[in-house]
Image 1 (tube, helix red, strand yellow):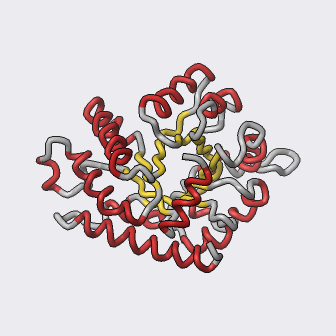
Image 2 (cartoon, rainbow, N blue to C red; image 1 turned 90 degrees about the vertical axis):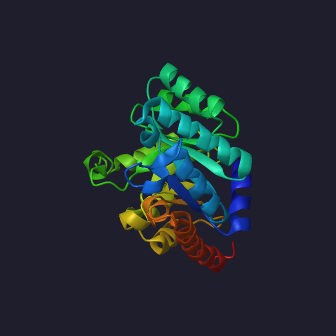
Length: 275
């Protein structure tokens, strides 16, 4: 999916919501544990319930790899189900890959050829040759970690060089030499507040994938105030607050209501900016 198609979906659905499929069998409703494939059964119900209100899904590979082959099969079935039933959805592999060039090339092959996903999250620490293998696929995206929500982000991302440049600033500026806004996005945590202003000065046109609203306490209004562009330029992710909104047999309806509530808030933000 290219940038224009993604922007058209955002405008048409009046939403820039990404639903994170961080499916934990210890948290899903108990009655699903009797299903042949509990992870997929949960995902399918969540997808059917939330698809009208979001433009993207983000399965986190850790939640599937933890179950070995069974988990990977559930992941594959989930991706295939979205592709066949909701082809307008942007699918992100939250995998945080990044290694020496030939290894990254195999990771890229996995996510873009084998699974046919739209995007993969990539760690920038090893530099250009660890990232560029992911950029060799037309219509596919790299989502580079820039400034994350976790407490430990301060350990490295906010450190400054002798000339006062923060490390995450360096990541943003240097990576623009590798790809433009048609193929590169950045992960920026919703809890980072006014740091979005700094980020937008460096990457004014790139999409930002923003986790951290909902259960992690990030403010959608604040993200939009400081991070939204004239085209939108945001994919805001919510995982736990939507998919675990209820643990009874009514979990799907509760997820739909939670997703709709976020979508309505997003629609108001888009409308206020004429998008």
